[in-house]
Length: 489
Image (tube, rainbow, N blue to C red; front, side, top):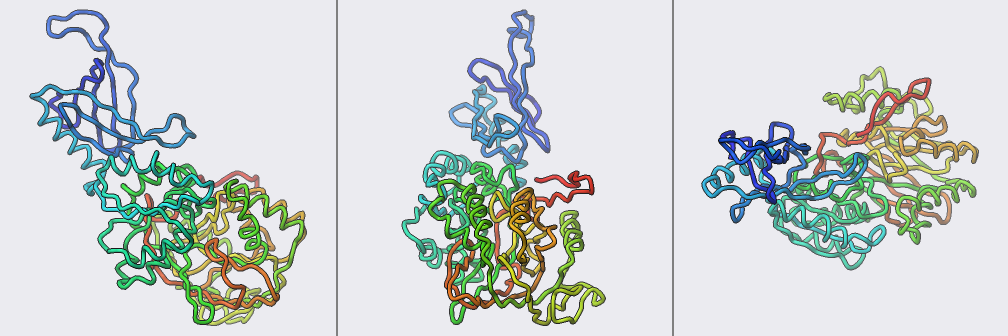
C-alpha cells in the first residue's frame, strides 16, 4: 500500500491497480508487467488506461475479507445513463488497517462529511408510466441504496390514494421519502403529508423522485435533462442531494382543499392529459399525439379568470432567473413601486399584486404552476423559481392552428414563452370559474371536479432533494440569429 492516505495499491485479478482520489475525482489505474526483471521487484510496471470518476458518483468503499471494494456510478458513453459498477482487489494483511482508513477517507470526501447510510421510506408505484416501476427499482435503484448502507422501508402501492393513506400515518424518523413513480404519486404524498398529525415536521422530510412515470417533470426539474429520466442518477440524488425548499400551492374548491406542487390546467392542455391516459405506455409521446389532435379541434376555453399579478414583463422575468442562477436572490414581490400599476386589467404594463385583475380575452387554455418542465417534451414554465412565493401563469389566447403547430418547435426548450399570444404572468394567487357546462380541470396530472377554484401560494413549504440550489434546467435564450445564449444542465 502507498504511504499516501489518498492512494492504495490492490491486486485486482492478478493486475496491480492503483486506487487514488483528490478533491474532485476518484481514479482507478491498472498497471501491467512489461516482462523485464529488476533487482528490487518482480517486474517493471507499465501504466494502462486510467478511469476517472467524479467523487459525487462514488457510492461506497469498504474493506472485507482482505479486499478493498469501491462501488460507483459510470456512463458507458457520453449520452448513456449511469450504471453501478465495482472495483475490488486484495491487499496484504499488514495493509488492512491502512486500507480501511483509506476507504473511510474516500467516503468522507465523497459524501462531504455526511452519513451515507440513510433511513428511507420508499414508495413504489408498479403501474406508473410504462409499468416498469417495480423492475427499475429492484434492478437499478435498490442496489445503489443498499450499497450505501441505507435502511429501506419499502411499500408497493396497490390503488389510487394508497400513498395518501400511508404517508398521513408514517413516522417522522425518515431522512427522505423516495418516490418511485411519476408526478402523480408525489401529488399523493404531499397531500398525505398535509393530513399528517405533525404536518409541519412532516413537510420538512425531503422528497426524492425516481422517474418511472410518464411525465416525470419534477425529476427533470431537479436533475436536469441529462439525468432527469435516469433512475440511477435519481438514486444517487437520494444519497448526495441537499434539501431544496420549494413553493407549494393551496388549491381550493368550496370546502375541499388540495396541495398542488406542479401545475393546474384547464382547456386544451387539460384535455390532452386526460384523453391520452390510455397511451401512458408511450411515455412523453402521448402528449405530442394529444396536442396534435387538440390543435386540429382548436376548442376554446370559456373561463372567468382573475389574478393577483406581480409581474408580466417577460424580459425582466428572464433577468430574475439568471440572477438567481448567478447566486443572487431576486424578490419579485418586492419590485419597486414604479414598476407596478394599479390598472385593473393585465393588458397594461404591470398590476399590483395586492389587487385582483381580470383577464378577459378568449383563450384556448390556462396553465399555472412552477418548475420549468411538466414533461420532457414541454418546458412550460421556463422562468420559474423554486421559492419566489409566486405562481407562473401561462395563458394561450386563441390563435391559428398554424401558429399552434409551429409552437411545437422548441417547446422542449421553453421557446413557446416568447410567442406573442402566450400571455405569461407571475402572481401571488389566482381564481377561475369555468363558464362551460362540462370540461376538464387537472391538478398535478390528476383530474378534479370541473368547478370554480382558487389557488394560493404556500411559500417554501415543500422540500425536495436536489444537486443544485435551484431548478436544474437553464432557459436557453436565443439571439437574433437564433444562437443559444445559455446551455442546459
